[in-house]
Image: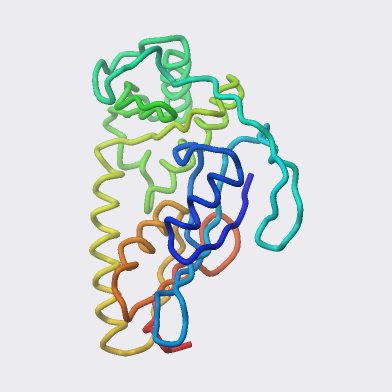
Length: 247
Protein backbone atom coordinates (compact mmCIF):
# COMPACT_ATOMS: atom_id res chain seq x y z
CA UNK A 1 0.00 0.00 0.00
CA UNK A 2 1.12 3.58 -0.62
CA UNK A 3 0.85 6.77 1.48
CA UNK A 4 2.24 10.28 0.98
CA UNK A 5 3.76 12.52 3.64
CA UNK A 6 5.38 15.94 3.73
CA UNK A 7 7.98 17.63 5.90
CA UNK A 8 10.54 20.41 5.96
CA UNK A 9 13.29 17.80 5.53
CA UNK A 10 13.50 14.21 4.31
CA UNK A 11 14.08 13.03 7.90
CA UNK A 12 11.05 14.91 9.19
CA UNK A 13 8.80 13.42 6.50
CA UNK A 14 10.08 9.89 7.17
CA UNK A 15 9.71 10.32 10.95
CA UNK A 16 6.14 11.52 10.42
CA UNK A 17 5.38 8.49 8.23
CA UNK A 18 6.78 6.06 10.81
CA UNK A 19 4.83 7.70 13.66
CA UNK A 20 1.49 7.98 11.87
CA UNK A 21 1.61 4.51 10.32
CA UNK A 22 2.90 2.88 13.48
CA UNK A 23 5.81 1.22 11.65
CA UNK A 24 9.56 0.99 12.11
CA UNK A 25 11.57 2.89 9.48
CA UNK A 26 12.99 -0.40 8.16
CA UNK A 27 9.46 -1.71 7.54
CA UNK A 28 8.69 0.50 4.54
CA UNK A 29 10.31 1.84 1.38
CA UNK A 30 10.55 5.58 0.77
CA UNK A 31 10.20 7.26 -2.62
CA UNK A 32 11.07 10.96 -2.72
CA UNK A 33 8.57 12.72 -4.98
CA UNK A 34 9.69 16.32 -4.59
CA UNK A 35 12.32 18.27 -2.68
CA UNK A 36 12.98 22.00 -2.27
CA UNK A 37 15.76 23.49 -0.18
CA UNK A 38 15.64 26.44 2.21
CA UNK A 39 15.83 29.79 0.50
CA UNK A 40 15.63 33.45 1.35
CA UNK A 41 11.87 33.63 0.82
CA UNK A 42 10.76 30.01 1.27
CA UNK A 43 11.25 27.16 3.69
CA UNK A 44 12.54 23.73 2.80
CA UNK A 45 9.96 21.19 1.66
CA UNK A 46 10.06 17.45 0.99
CA UNK A 47 7.22 15.22 -0.21
CA UNK A 48 7.62 11.44 -0.01
CA UNK A 49 5.60 8.35 -0.89
CA UNK A 50 5.76 5.38 1.48
CA UNK A 51 5.36 1.83 0.17
CA UNK A 52 4.47 -0.62 2.96
CA UNK A 53 4.55 -3.63 0.61
CA UNK A 54 1.95 -5.40 2.76
CA UNK A 55 -1.58 -5.82 1.44
CA UNK A 56 -2.73 -6.92 4.92
CA UNK A 57 -1.55 -3.69 6.53
CA UNK A 58 -4.36 -1.37 7.53
CA UNK A 59 -3.78 2.03 9.13
CA UNK A 60 -5.14 3.58 12.85
CA UNK A 61 -6.62 6.98 12.64
CA UNK A 62 -4.44 9.33 10.66
CA UNK A 63 -4.77 11.81 7.83
CA UNK A 64 -3.05 11.40 4.51
CA UNK A 65 -1.52 14.24 2.48
CA UNK A 66 -4.93 15.13 1.03
CA UNK A 67 -6.54 15.37 4.46
CA UNK A 68 -8.48 12.13 4.07
CA UNK A 69 -9.02 10.18 7.28
CA UNK A 70 -7.98 6.54 7.33
CA UNK A 71 -7.98 3.77 9.93
CA UNK A 72 -4.80 3.06 11.86
CA UNK A 73 -3.76 -0.44 12.96
CA UNK A 74 -1.20 -2.10 15.13
CA UNK A 75 1.32 -4.03 13.09
CA UNK A 76 2.18 -7.49 14.37
CA UNK A 77 5.71 -8.43 13.48
CA UNK A 78 6.39 -11.98 12.45
CA UNK A 79 10.08 -11.72 13.27
CA UNK A 80 13.11 -11.80 11.07
CA UNK A 81 13.88 -14.04 8.13
CA UNK A 82 16.22 -16.02 10.34
CA UNK A 83 16.09 -17.18 13.93
CA UNK A 84 17.75 -15.33 16.81
CA UNK A 85 20.56 -12.84 16.32
CA UNK A 86 22.22 -13.79 13.05
CA UNK A 87 25.10 -12.13 11.22
CA UNK A 88 24.19 -9.96 8.23
CA UNK A 89 26.73 -11.79 6.07
CA UNK A 90 27.48 -15.41 6.81
CA UNK A 91 26.47 -18.86 5.70
CA UNK A 92 25.30 -18.70 2.04
CA UNK A 93 23.27 -21.90 2.28
CA UNK A 94 19.63 -21.63 3.50
CA UNK A 95 19.36 -21.77 7.29
CA UNK A 96 15.62 -22.17 7.80
CA UNK A 97 12.44 -23.25 6.04
CA UNK A 98 11.70 -19.77 4.67
CA UNK A 99 15.15 -19.43 3.12
CA UNK A 100 14.92 -22.94 1.65
CA UNK A 101 11.61 -22.09 -0.01
CA UNK A 102 12.81 -18.72 -1.30
CA UNK A 103 16.05 -20.03 -2.82
CA UNK A 104 14.21 -23.03 -4.24
CA UNK A 105 11.55 -20.82 -5.80
CA UNK A 106 14.16 -18.51 -7.33
CA UNK A 107 16.18 -21.44 -8.71
CA UNK A 108 13.09 -23.04 -10.21
CA UNK A 109 11.97 -19.73 -11.70
CA UNK A 110 15.16 -19.02 -13.64
CA UNK A 111 15.47 -22.67 -14.67
CA UNK A 112 11.98 -22.59 -16.20
CA UNK A 113 13.02 -19.42 -18.01
CA UNK A 114 15.83 -21.40 -19.62
CA UNK A 115 18.65 -19.63 -17.73
CA UNK A 116 19.55 -21.97 -14.83
CA UNK A 117 21.89 -21.00 -12.02
CA UNK A 118 22.59 -21.44 -8.32
CA UNK A 119 20.78 -19.25 -5.80
CA UNK A 120 22.32 -18.67 -2.37
CA UNK A 121 21.80 -16.28 0.54
CA UNK A 122 23.76 -13.04 0.14
CA UNK A 123 22.81 -11.39 3.46
CA UNK A 124 20.31 -11.55 6.30
CA UNK A 125 18.79 -8.61 8.17
CA UNK A 126 15.82 -8.29 10.49
CA UNK A 127 13.33 -7.49 7.74
CA UNK A 128 15.44 -8.15 4.63
CA UNK A 129 16.77 -11.24 2.91
CA UNK A 130 19.37 -10.88 0.15
CA UNK A 131 19.62 -13.60 -2.49
CA UNK A 132 22.40 -14.00 -5.06
CA UNK A 133 22.21 -15.74 -8.43
CA UNK A 134 25.35 -17.38 -9.80
CA UNK A 135 24.76 -18.11 -13.48
CA UNK A 136 26.52 -17.93 -16.84
CA UNK A 137 23.37 -16.16 -18.04
CA UNK A 138 23.65 -13.26 -15.56
CA UNK A 139 23.60 -10.54 -18.25
CA UNK A 140 20.25 -11.84 -19.53
CA UNK A 141 18.82 -12.19 -16.03
CA UNK A 142 19.82 -8.58 -15.28
CA UNK A 143 18.33 -7.23 -18.51
CA UNK A 144 18.43 -3.66 -19.80
CA UNK A 145 18.84 -1.23 -16.88
CA UNK A 146 18.17 -4.14 -14.50
CA UNK A 147 14.51 -4.51 -15.49
CA UNK A 148 14.64 -8.33 -15.68
CA UNK A 149 16.26 -8.49 -12.26
CA UNK A 150 13.65 -6.09 -10.86
CA UNK A 151 10.86 -8.26 -12.30
CA UNK A 152 12.34 -11.41 -10.75
CA UNK A 153 12.73 -9.61 -7.43
CA UNK A 154 9.08 -8.54 -7.56
CA UNK A 155 7.98 -12.15 -8.09
CA UNK A 156 10.09 -13.26 -5.13
CA UNK A 157 8.46 -10.67 -2.88
CA UNK A 158 5.01 -11.75 -4.02
CA UNK A 159 5.93 -15.35 -3.21
CA UNK A 160 7.25 -14.28 0.22
CA UNK A 161 3.85 -12.67 0.85
CA UNK A 162 2.10 -15.92 -0.04
CA UNK A 163 4.30 -17.63 2.54
CA UNK A 164 2.80 -15.15 5.04
CA UNK A 165 6.10 -13.25 5.30
CA UNK A 166 5.08 -9.77 4.20
CA UNK A 167 7.42 -8.43 6.90
CA UNK A 168 10.49 -9.50 4.92
CA UNK A 169 11.70 -7.65 1.84
CA UNK A 170 13.67 -9.86 -0.57
CA UNK A 171 16.59 -8.29 -2.48
CA UNK A 172 17.86 -10.19 -5.53
CA UNK A 173 21.28 -9.57 -7.07
CA UNK A 174 23.76 -11.14 -9.46
CA UNK A 175 27.31 -10.15 -10.47
CA UNK A 176 27.09 -7.29 -7.88
CA UNK A 177 24.77 -5.46 -10.28
CA UNK A 178 23.00 -3.52 -7.52
CA UNK A 179 26.25 -1.98 -6.23
CA UNK A 180 27.53 -1.21 -9.73
CA UNK A 181 24.19 0.37 -10.62
CA UNK A 182 24.27 2.59 -7.52
CA UNK A 183 27.77 3.82 -8.34
CA UNK A 184 26.71 4.54 -11.93
CA UNK A 185 23.64 6.49 -10.83
CA UNK A 186 25.61 8.61 -8.35
CA UNK A 187 28.04 9.57 -11.14
CA UNK A 188 25.10 10.30 -13.45
CA UNK A 189 23.44 12.51 -10.84
CA UNK A 190 26.54 14.66 -10.35
CA UNK A 191 27.19 14.94 -14.09
CA UNK A 192 23.60 16.00 -14.78
CA UNK A 193 23.68 18.49 -11.89
CA UNK A 194 26.78 20.11 -13.37
CA UNK A 195 25.13 20.43 -16.78
CA UNK A 196 22.02 21.94 -15.21
CA UNK A 197 24.08 24.48 -13.29
CA UNK A 198 25.91 25.49 -16.46
CA UNK A 199 22.75 25.81 -18.59
CA UNK A 200 20.49 27.05 -15.76
CA UNK A 201 17.80 24.83 -17.28
CA UNK A 202 16.51 21.33 -16.58
CA UNK A 203 17.18 17.75 -17.68
CA UNK A 204 14.66 14.89 -17.60
CA UNK A 205 16.26 11.52 -16.86
CA UNK A 206 15.20 8.12 -18.17
CA UNK A 207 12.37 6.21 -16.41
CA UNK A 208 13.63 4.58 -13.21
CA UNK A 209 12.31 2.32 -10.47
CA UNK A 210 11.60 3.85 -7.00
CA UNK A 211 14.99 2.96 -5.50
CA UNK A 212 16.97 4.41 -8.41
CA UNK A 213 14.93 7.63 -8.24
CA UNK A 214 15.49 7.83 -4.48
CA UNK A 215 19.23 7.54 -5.08
CA UNK A 216 19.18 10.47 -7.54
CA UNK A 217 17.12 12.61 -5.14
CA UNK A 218 19.33 11.95 -2.11
CA UNK A 219 22.60 12.34 -4.05
CA UNK A 220 21.62 15.85 -5.17
CA UNK A 221 19.84 16.87 -1.99
CA UNK A 222 22.83 18.81 -0.63
CA UNK A 223 23.52 20.81 -3.80
CA UNK A 224 21.96 24.17 -2.98
CA UNK A 225 21.22 25.48 -6.47
CA UNK A 226 19.81 22.22 -7.91
CA UNK A 227 16.46 20.58 -7.17
CA UNK A 228 14.77 17.34 -8.27
CA UNK A 229 11.23 16.16 -8.85
CA UNK A 230 9.66 12.86 -9.97
CA UNK A 231 7.34 13.06 -12.99
CA UNK A 232 5.00 10.56 -14.60
CA UNK A 233 2.75 7.70 -13.52
CA UNK A 234 3.30 4.06 -12.65
CA UNK A 235 6.32 2.31 -11.18
CA UNK A 236 8.90 3.68 -13.63
CA UNK A 237 8.79 7.47 -13.29
CA UNK A 238 11.33 10.02 -14.48
CA UNK A 239 13.38 12.42 -12.37
CA UNK A 240 13.68 16.00 -13.56
CA UNK A 241 16.80 17.82 -12.37
CA UNK A 242 16.43 21.58 -12.63
CA UNK A 243 18.27 24.75 -11.71
CA UNK A 244 16.89 26.39 -8.59
CA UNK A 245 14.81 29.43 -9.40
CA UNK A 246 13.83 28.08 -12.83
CA UNK A 247 10.24 27.48 -11.68
